[in-house]
Amino acid sequence: MALRFLGTTSDDGDCPTLYEIDGTDEVLVQGERETDPEHLVQLRDVKPSETFVRVPRSLLTRYAPREEAPELQPFASISHLFREFRHTAWRLESRRGYASDRNSPKWQRWLNGEDITSEPANAWRENVAEQTAAGKRFERVRLVDDPPAQGQLFLLTSAPGNVAAGEDIRNLTRAEAEHLRLPDYDFWLFDSRIVARFAFDEDDTTLGVYVTEDPAEVLAACQARDAALHHAVPTAEFTERVRSKV
Image 1 (cartoon, rainbow, N blue to C red):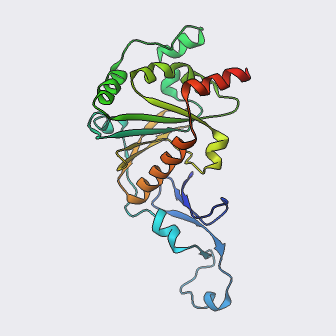
Image 2: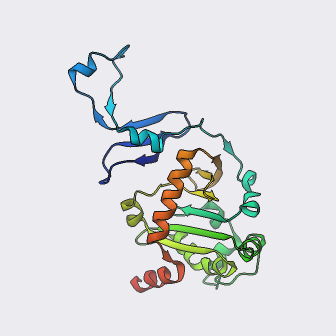
Image 3: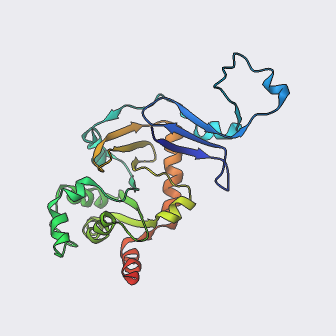
């Protein structure tokens, strides 16, 4: 089962760290192994398979989940949030491609060399325009490999249509994201209060979302957003950088 990074209090990225084991209600703790004999002798009911690690209280205070693990919901269950959020809807996109893109008519037109930078308005862009006209913000940061994967090049090419509708779409290299310890999963963050974390299968198809208001999850999402926005580059500028390397 996959591990999901929750947070660390280490500045150099080694330990201590918390992870969630996807598909379970268990958390994995990384820390220095306890070796003090005076402590070990006081531990109770120790099984041969168990070990013990030391972590600072601040790690658990900041990142340990405070609620039960959320259940997987259909993506449609959060569709209302894209209209009803009050000030910000922010997305981190971490994958190298998405089945929804590859299955769209626009994908084939792009492969054929057609111009997809200015598409007619659709329901998504119409809603973006409506919400941003009301003073709200739609924002994304997309992680991009070096060299970019095919799915990432498609998103760079098609982004101007969403930007014209009012989205602030920025890009960040995966190397920079890893240096910043950003999450390696996709999520939406609404109003710094609700997190909707995506689940995908091995073919990049969306299986649903895990929706939570757990303070620890929301804090981690807000920290990721702030770090990503500070370092990410607007789409037009980033696209020019990519083209200059071709």
